[in-house]
Length: 499
Image (cartoon, rainbow, N blue to C red; front, top):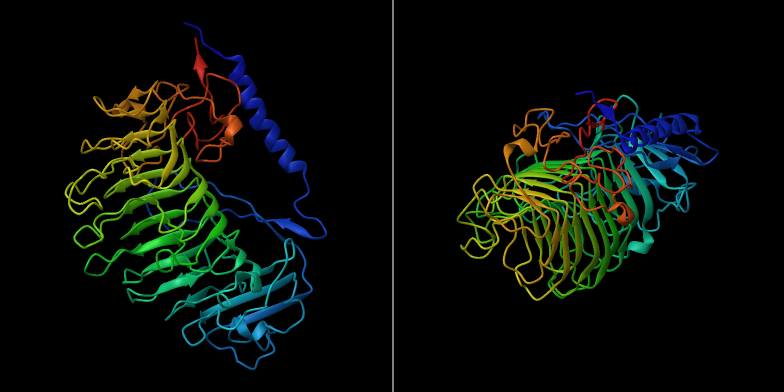
């Protein structure tokens, strides 16, 4: 039988080609701004398709340029290339540090009495004129902590508009100390962006990579960064990549507009990301990330096994949460604990979860070792789950019995399982590969039950897939899971051949 390309598919290819041409014609910089280039050279050795590169806007020029050498610089240095200073605090009071834009090049092991952001209150940029921190050319920088590293204090409005960009080789490392009560950075600052950085405990006992504890922390963004090797210790230590936000339950911490996009979180003893505010907090995007090998370190301790993502309330309720396009696998408990707030869970691939059958965060029962759990906690709002692949190799359910998990459709789950209306049954033919060290891992092709069987969510912001491939707005071609058909492959990328 002769085959042809459908009209819609021709349009899809035209959109992709046009986007490439338009991007080539647009200027990459102007008098005030550049777009980052160069991609990301991920550290994760596995061969699965890594998160897509995201370009961000950064200053193209600066009123001043400074240099920090944490190993050989001087506390009294001029912060110049020939006379570098030693600490971030040495920058305060210099030209440009109250409004920006400023370029800062860093290298060596940077600390400051165990707190490398000590005393930088009132050192700030402004939107579009940020303090832009990068590795000193030809070098790397390691932000080494022995403490909690509060960014300028506990008043976020005093320290704001900084960008940390490690470059394509993730040349800025944030090292979490080998102490189960310590964190890498307490990000109590507004409009801070961590971009292409690596955050690690070096297989030690650090607690959390990035945490917030202050009221009204706004616009924290973590993009194209890699969290890894926080999976050691004894007594079920709950080591997490990110915690938004944490002080005592019913305390003061809150946030707005948190973005966690296109990162890798792996070998994490506790959660990947925990959203658990102490006061009402609005706006969370967890999108395009890869989570794997999560939550095992807590299984034999009082915390029990943990999920890739926790959304909960400890006094405040989160709202406006979007969890989409994530690739999640090898999880001790669940992919998501959706226990509080209004949560939209769209087009994720949640595979091989519930692997520790006797521990799941409920004191020894297995009710929450499911793909997505709301837990009937009383805090949940409207949990919507559409276009997700949710399959447990060990046979765990896709959902718990929570009354909050009722708005579900067009998911794929195991035979005999319930995952909402208009759903399909999993088989290994749904994806091209179930081997994590394969470039086709968990991708789909045109013959998959996930191809073209999802509900159209384009108007709700689902315009790209996990690999950064554009989705079409036309009906009938919205795929299920994190990947589009052939997403992440070379051009034509999303071609479908139909009779």
